[in-house]
Image 1 (spheres, rainbow, N blue to C red):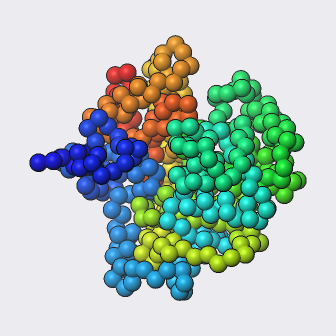
Image 2 (image 1 turned 180 degrees about the vertical axis):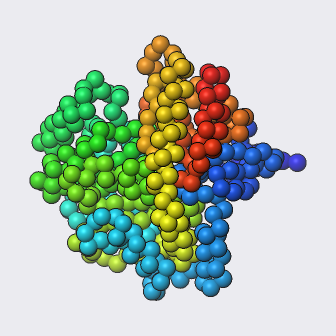
Image 3 (image 1 turned 60 degrees about the vertical axis):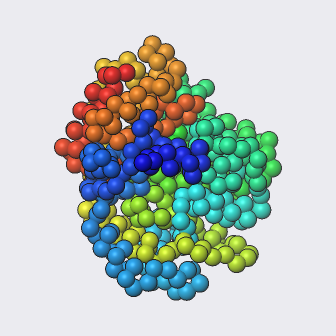
Length: 426
């Protein structure tokens, strides 16, 4: 009998990556755990790439999806849609953007694509500033602003992209500086860059770089950037696809760590909002959002079923203070992992916030990334019953840890113990 892996390879493109030397088929989940087709149970520390935000098979979400599907599955944005309006009202209020309008899409890629359309149209410019080591999606336009070679398969682009320093604190030419000096140097670099460009439409930035290995600048960098940008009318797009909805613990949105100059002009979101259902979106002021001068709809964005899931999931997250749980349990987990890492020569850094944690691995005694070690630890963790992700800039050498936000202290300790054992196999 042909295995599912062989069937996958026969019909799915080679560039669709699979984890593990012997890829697993996840068949079902509950809470923070999933099971594979062989009956193995795993503690899930990656949540479908930060998408299963609250818990697997959360009853409140599955009930909302089922009840909505029994009424109507699809109608499109050409008709009034109560669940879409209700979710948009809540997201607009939570966004912090004055006079906000919300447009729903089906993914983070599409959300960022829409944000770029809004910014370039509003500013009448195709020049975009992006951060080195960034990732913003897999469409033609978002690939062209992604500052990570591993995820950018073409240099062709509808945009002119210029890359700015600052997304990675502990590597690069400014790594040796203090936080204040780091921000000052990055702002000076930005000002110098703007002196060589035509009118720029926007800066797009992830407050914490996801695929890049959960790297981030010192708090306040993007606020300092925004002061420079605002003087020239340049918009700030905050890509909250991975940092949104309280995952960082300290803030509901990643941009709030850089809030001195106010909220971003445009905010994008996706991933966890619907706990695995396909939802993304864009928030912007009415002035920016309504500036498109042609018709536009979304056939599947704002689907009644996915909106029902989003409403139920957001309500659960807020009512159970999962942001606070991410802060408390994530704080304990990151300190536990730092203590483990201090005794493992291959661990260069343990970083992150809340339940968004990265462990960067290097060849011991050097600063050289070690992707082979990252793969080995990931395999060992799976054998121990723990699923984690990978990422990183120049080389995929960062273990990415992002469990559902309802993670318990006991589960955090269990996962840390498995990771300790896995790291000591390197």
